[in-house]
Length: 104
Image (tube, rainbow, N blue to C red; front, side):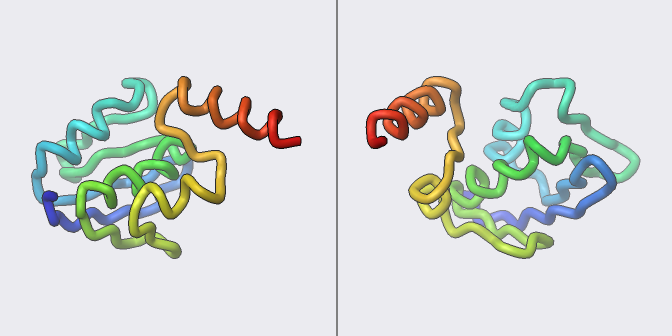
C-alpha cells in the first residue's frame, strides 16, 4: 500500500496524471503501451490516452492510493470488475466474454 495521492486531469484526448513519485504507480503506467503514454518533464506529469486512462484509477486505487480529479472515484478494482467488462489482461477479457456467452 503506497498511499500516494494521484490527480487525473482531462486534457483533450488525454489525461494528465500527476503525483509525487511512487515507484508502484509509475510501474503501472509503464505497463501501458508506449504509444498511449508519455512523460512530460516540463509539467512533471504523465499524459495517457483517455481509453487507457479510464481503467488506471481502479488499478491505482488497488494499491491504496487516493484518486482525485475524477467524478466517480473507485475504491478498488473489484468494485468495477463485478458489474462491468473491465479486465486488466486479454486472458481475463476472453474469460469474461466466455462466461457471458455461457450464461445466455
